[in-house]
Structure formats: C-alpha cells, structure tokens
Image (cartoon, rainbow, N blue to C red; front, side, top):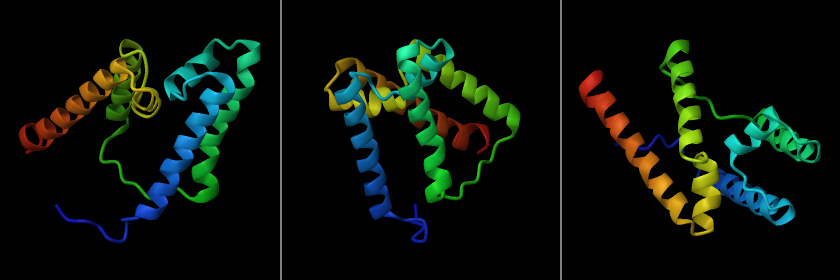
Amino acid sequence: MTIDWHQFTPGLSLFGGLLIGLAAAGLILLTGRIAGISGIIGGLLHPRPAEFGWRLAFLAGLIAAPILFGAPKSRIDAGWPTLVIAGLLVGIGTRYGAGCTSGHGVCGLSRLSVRSFTAVATFMAAGFATVFLARHWVWG
C-alpha cells in the first residue's frame, strides 16, 4: 500500500472530524436527538411540525458544506445500477440495524452503547469481507 501524498490531508481531516463531533454534540445537547443521518432524513419523510426545521437545516448543511468549502475529487468505478442497488441495500441495512454508520459510529460509540459497538463491528466486518471478496475473488 502506498500513500498518495497529494491527497493526504491530516489537518483538514482532523478539522472535519472536530466539526462532525461538535455538530453531533450540539444536536444531542440542544435537542436530545442523535445525529444519525438515516434517522434525520427518515424524519423528513413523515415530519412532525416541531421537528421539520432542524432536520431540514441539518440536511441543508450536509449538502451546502462541500459546495461552499469544496468537495474532494472522487472517482466511482460503478455504474448507476450498481449504485442504486448499493443504496437500497444500505437503506435496508439501516432499518434492520436501527441506525446508520453516523448514528452508531459517531454518536453511539461516544455514548459507549453496546448496541452501537455491535453494529459498528458488524458493518465494518461486512465491509472488509465485501472488499476482499470483490477484489480477490469476483474481479480478481
């Protein structure tokens, strides 16, 4: 494995991580809600009037930040059918897992939740296994 030194940005990564932590801490301290994206977006599908504003503001911030501050260039080596299927599988997984990576990984682990630790360990292991199988067995 080699490091692409032009893309290696530990300072910006630290800053981004701090912003995520502050946003998650602020949301739970001010509203008592977990900053899990699947739950925030899910709440917009069947909104309660008192919760619509903060959910929409949180989602708008997620969309606006890369536009305002510049998103890193990325390359996705998959077609639309693969991306749609992957998105649907992730959505199904968030329903079965009672949350997404941000909810369990950022907020749940920081609260020392055993359920979140189990969820994070499970989806990390599944991700490692999927990449290994795809790279070494399927597309060799």
